[in-house]
Amino acid sequence: MEAKNIVETKNVQQAKGLTGQVDNQVAQQAVCGIVGEAVAQPTAEEQAKEQLRQVLRETRIRTDTDVPPEEYALQVDEKGIFALRDIHAIKAKQKAGKTTMLKVCIAALLSGAMFRVKSLLEKPKILFFDTEQSRTDTKQILLDVAQMTGLPPEVIDAQVSLHSLRRIDQEQLLPLLEMALGDEKPQVVMLDGIVEFVASFNDETESKQLIKDLLKLSDEHNCAILCVLHTNKSDDDHNMRGHLGTMLAQKSATVLECVKERGSSVITVRCSEARHEEMPEWSITFDSEGHIISADEQRRLLMEQRKAEQAMKRQEALDKEKQERLDKCLRILTDKGGVVSRKQLTEILVNVLDRKRPTVSTYITEWLKNGSIVEVNGMIQVSNDLALPF
Image (cartoon, rainbow, N blue to C red; front, side, top):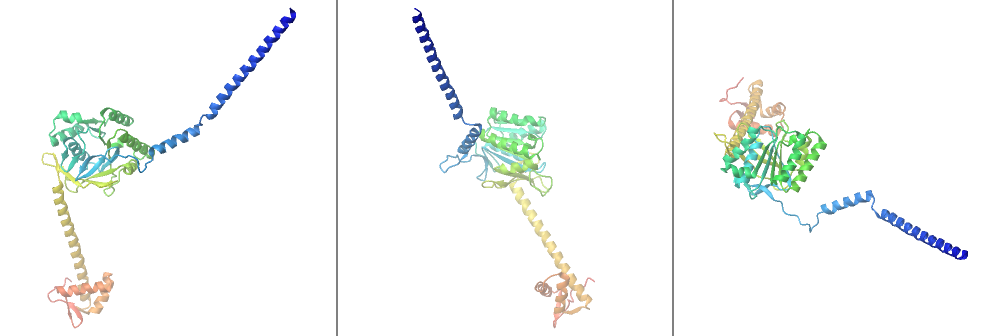
């Protein structure tokens, strides 16, 4: 009996030993699997590199890459402007007609054409953020568009989403734009006063980020974003203000400038920079009732008048210079007793007029031809018909 118990106890112990060995093997295999999986997982550095490679794959353009042609919102004389999925700039001095120009663009988009500006979109929706004017002046945009197009209020309101944002804090403007783009789904966006979107237009980092955000939004929402910004105050400086202006000029597909013609109410819109073909110039002004009208012919006449005035001024300056040269010649003759040899007169005039000998010779020949002076036996004297001014 005792021998039987001893045998059974020994068998149990052996069984337990075998089970423990199996459990240890399973545990070891599990540990190896976990370690293997951990080793197989990419590191953070490898993941970052793979993300960069993915960006490069997505952004690479190949010869067989399908890229749709640019779609323009408007055209002037068959030249397209304001491509969708891009940003554009409109610049000018203060009170030089930027908003007036935008009114013409809105009118063209709504009615199909306004003056020489024609729409290339079918019933487009327009989003307009006005960050500069009062509510009264902002509403005048719609009133002027209605006057130009003759469209009823319900049509204008259905296609134009106009917002007066002069009192809105700067930090809210970009989120409001993002929200409006998602809700309204416009094809053309007009930001009249983009400078209000940044705390400082001279902050390079902030300016770069804003332009980057606008580029991204224009691409995501398939729209053209028109950014209005003043130029520097100096009359001769046509650059847009600060780092914001620099970045906007660099990234914009089109840069248009509104210029008020000196001494008139004519506003000329010209293309100062473009990636492709430049837009032809066009002009607008106001009639006696303050309505916006085309001014292409008026500007043509204005330019012709200005050219004539400039030519007259140049001729007057030339005549004055000629008379001054003749007066100096007559003074020399007077100082020499009224008669001097041509050779001596030439030498004196070379020094007095600071001109070369051939040039002085042409002066003397001209004076002889028109009778201002006469030559007798190689001696130059004052013409009897010319009274000396001395």
